[in-house]
Length: 259
View 1: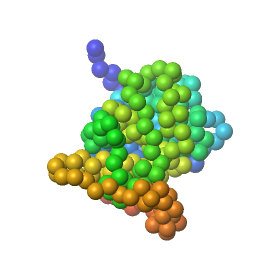
View 2: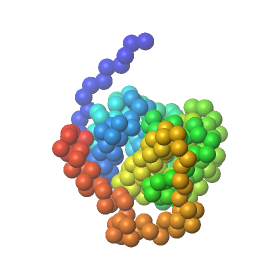
View 3: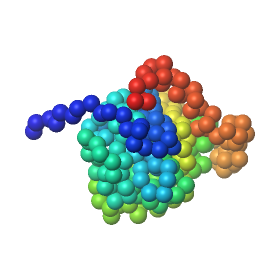
View 4: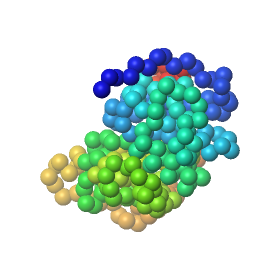
């Protein structure tokens, strides 16, 4: 099969609203940060963001670009039926569309959906008991965690109701034998939640490698963690607190995501 050669993408900034352009910049930043932290899986997995406005459109990655190549202008705008609504040189991932369109359609409070196949995340997703309450970070994840059983590559709309039901009103979803998913009312929140999720999985894998009995956090502490989050982040929330610094780190590495 001959590879498709795609020309350079010009900026779409003049064609979109100021609000959409800012969303594009933040979403492209999230893709670059996933690559920077080493959670990417070549062209696979996806992050999507709802486009501000009444049209029920969302942005997702151009299928075939690596995460460290994605820019604000290269993101693909689609509707909830999978129709590409703005000219692009790229298709979208069929599996990515099924997962993200299901959640965007069902959760009006969600403006960003982030899904990765990190090694630590997939490793823990294969464990029968999933996330264990063995770290401070795990208490944040366990306070809003769902599980979705593996049904193969997500290509059928038939899986959407089960996926949505298992996520329910939660912010973290472990896709068993598959990977991790977070949602947020902002791109910043979804990204920082994924940072926590992946960190929890890394800690668990390392703790289990010690071949020693693990100490679990008291369930009463886990139950009360939601009330502690606002105080711990001085009322800003984990996304708003960390996002400006993450963008500064990315700007130092490569600011071309803004193109």
